[in-house]
Length: 239
Ligand code: 3NM
Image (spheres, rainbow, N blue to C red):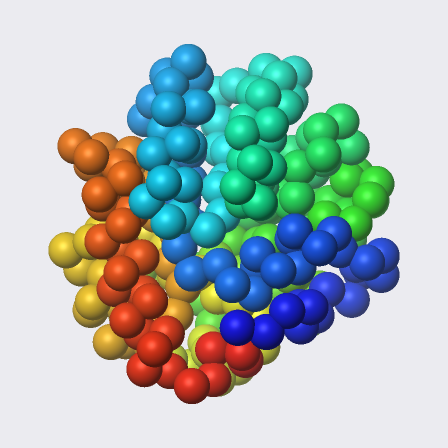
C-alpha cells in the first residue's frame, strides 16, 4: 500500500496530517458509530471492538445530539482512536474539527459545501461527502472532496428516506472518480461479497456492525473479505 498518495481536495491546500494520509489510502473498512443505535456511554466499548476487529477508520454520527455533546464525545473517543492510529471522522459538523483534533469531517448533500467545511474546520482535515448517484460522485470530486460515500447500495433503516441505488453503478463510479469510494447502505457481512463482486473496494457499515452480536468478529470477517479482494487487486494504489 502506498503512503502519502492522497490527493487532498482542491480546497485542501494544507498538508494533511500523516495519520489521515496513511489511513485514508489504506482504509477499506469504515465503521460508523451512530448514536441512534447505541447509547453514548457505550461508544468506547464499541470503538474498541471495531478497532480490534480491523476497522480502519471510525465515524461518529449523532443526528440527535447537540454540537457541544458531540464535541465532548469526539474528544474522549479521539483519545482512544489515536492509540491505534485510527482516524476519527465526525459527521455533519465541520466546526467540531476546530475544537477537537479529529482527523476528518463528513458532509451530506444538504450540508456545508466542501469549501465551507474546510473553512469551519480551520485546519487540514479529511473531508468526505455522501453521494447518491454517479453525477453526485463526480461532482464531489470536482468540488474537492477527499473521499466519497456512495449509496445507499441497499435499502437501510439507518437512512430510511433514501432510495437504494443498487449495485449497477459501482464499477462506473470507480472509473469516473479518482478518490477513495466507500460503498454504504445496507451492507452486511452476508452481502459484502456481492458488493465486492460489483466493484467495491471499500465499504462503510453502520447497523451491520453495531447490531452484530459480536462486533469484533463481524468486523474481522468483513475485513477478511476486503483483504482477500486486496490481494487479488494489483492496483488498489489507485483510489
Ligand atoms: N449514508 P447501514 S446510507 C449513513 O447513502 C448513511 O449516503 C448513506 O447504514 C448514503 O450500514 C447510510 O446501517 C446508512 O445501512 C448506512
